[in-house]
Figure (tube, rainbow, N blue to C red):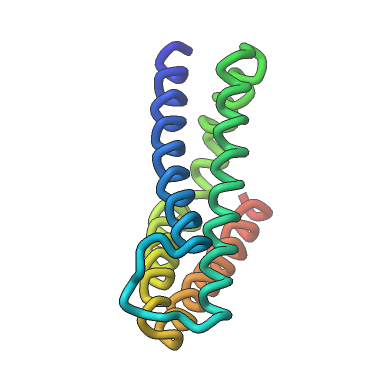
Length: 147
C-alpha cells in the first residue's frame, strides 16, 4: 500500500502543477496580463475561460479525493481496488481509452491555443474532440454491458 501512496502523492503534485497552469491561464484570461497577438471572438474567449475553470474545478476535486484517500485506510483500499479492477482494465483497453483520452486532450489544448488565432480551427478541433469522446464513451458502455 505504501507504493500506492507514493503513486497518489506523485499524481497530486502533477495535478497541482496542471492546476497552477490553468489558474495562470485564467488570470491572464480575466485580467489580460499578457497581450497575445490574436484577438479571439467573444464566444471563443468565453468558452476558453469556461473550459479552464471547469478543468481547475475537476482537478481540485481529484486532489481532494486523493488527499482524503491518503488520510483514511478504508478510502485508500477502495481507491486501490477501483484502479486495479481487472474487468474495468479490460473494458478500458478494449475501448481504447488511454490513447483516446490523450488524443482528445491534445485536440482540446490545440483548440484552445488555436482559438487565439482562428475561430474556425478552434471550433473544428473542439468539435472533433467532443465527437471522439462521445464515441469512446459509447464503446465503453457497450463493453460494460457485454463483458
